[in-house]
Amino acid sequence: MARSVLTPLKRADFRSLWIAQTVSIVGDKINQVGLSIMVFQLTGSLAQMGIVFAITFLPAALFGLVAGPLVDRWDRRRTMISADLLRAAFVSGMAVVAVVGMPVGVKIGLVYLLAFVSSTVALFFEPSRMALIPAVVTQDELMAANSLDMTTSSISELLGIGFGGALVATIGYGTAFWVDAVTFLISAGFVLAVGHRALARALPKLSLSVIGADLRAGLERIRNDGVLRGVVITYAAIALGGGATMTLSVLLALDVYTGNALPPALRLTVVDLATTVGVLVGAVAIGMSGPSGAGRKYLRGIIAFGVLFLPFMFIHDLWTAAVVLFLAGIANQYFGIPMITLLQTYTEPETRGRVFAVRTTIARIATVIGLAGAGIAAQVYGVLPMMVALGVFFILIGVLGYSMPRLRQA
Image 1 (tube, rainbow, N blue to C red):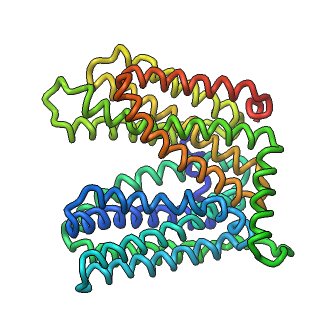
Image 2 (cartoon, rainbow, N blue to C red):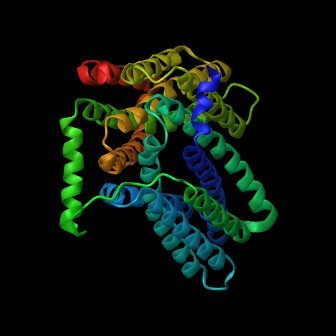
């Protein structure tokens, strides 16, 4: 069974996409660390650091829905290569800005601009990649491919943060940006090696009205399909709760479980590590479970995730909480990976970009709301009661999903 998780790697096209994504994620983390240190060293302001990261999320809210119709019109392979090359150019621009003498205000302004345009270009890479995966593996391999993709993405993020920190500490953020640019070039090289070619389609000439019509068609496609509609509705709620979970997990470490000898930073590390290891185990386990019953796995994963939050009212130490968060990380993948598989399976190739763009845009907006709202609610009602309330919320989402026959039977 374990071998089935790795089966998609036998296909050269998927293997190339997988390597490209892995290298790209490491580069993203180098960029994240480099930006953080650069902005903080130049300004000494935590607020400025927050602004630069908010700027990286802003393009998804502004252009996420528009990116989908464009991804569906363009060749996915060429779109990914173009996105990688453009991001390499913009990150190289950051490297130049980092070392050229200029007023701090001008330098920070240029960094914000380059971060914004780089994040905007990134909107076209991920939907293209997710839409291309079903074309390079079989239907029976799709769950395993998404499982492998999620597992390596999580590992790459962990390694990327550590490698990025060591790199910046050793060679400085300016040179680290050059290394980041090289990762995008490597990614583009592997995407170039993908042999799959999209079939040519006769499409109307590109215009704002055509893009709008394509977007409406994508939204209509979601509305008219019981599976897609059910996934998008439930996932919007999940993203809202997921944002709240991030905030509450931090508060558990920093404000609730303080009765031990560990300093705050290490308590936060324990919480993050427990969840991340659970995510990795869950990603492997769901990949080994086979391709059938994605709808039921999705809904059961949501309910299991919610049930695991209910005991927090009675958990009074960090280590017990870490065990529960590890199990919650496993449950997270039992709804996260089937969700992606359902979107890929029930969407035609020519509309996948739009569907994934809608999912990503909704998720980003809902996550930001959840992140902010949970902190306010915890201030009023307490962290542990909010954890339990969040558990009930997820259970209700799962029950709602079970009331949708098409989603339940998918």
